[in-house]
Image (cartoon, rainbow, N blue to C red; front, side, top):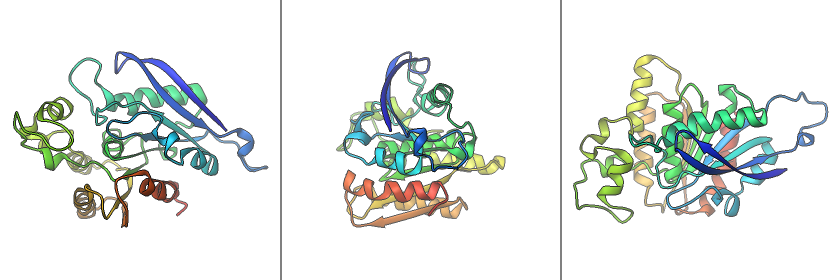
Length: 262
């Protein structure tokens, strides 16, 4: 097992950025089994977090070894993993195209859609869902844990307003015009509708949220939306708050599900 730290210049972000990577050793593959390019799971951190969170508090290393997955841990700052109009703020394209292409080429990872996954918690859960939809030709499935599906909650927010997390100016910078947010490409539901209209294949989703989590209702609403539109997903609730105690319980079932091993 190897855990590495890499700094490289991102054209999307117009600066050097850091990511962590977890690579199982080739000898971890069962003896006699064919050696195929390794599958990839990108795991995203939450608001105010960084690329080390899944290493410090999560069980990502164990999961990489157990399921022979390359796990990539990017730095997304507080971007909600969305593409902004400003130079150096193309976070979705950085995750869904540039970084993925870099690690595939550098480490010889599989380039097949069916071997490429993304996941995250809170802001990272939103980012995983949205990125999988924006780049549906790249990602076969996504894991969203306590996902910050806040589009409807901040839609129509006015200057001077805010909530317990951030103010209007922050949300406007991340999401764009808040008066028409629900109709924008920052809304995962809009991306689902567009993919459906074009007849394109959608990613599958593993979703989970704790019953004591402040984001419970938005996750319930999104699950109901996916069901109404016939999207392949599973959704779980149970005792739990907005923390790694809950997220660690669901990372392995989520990986099993996206790998079709549940």
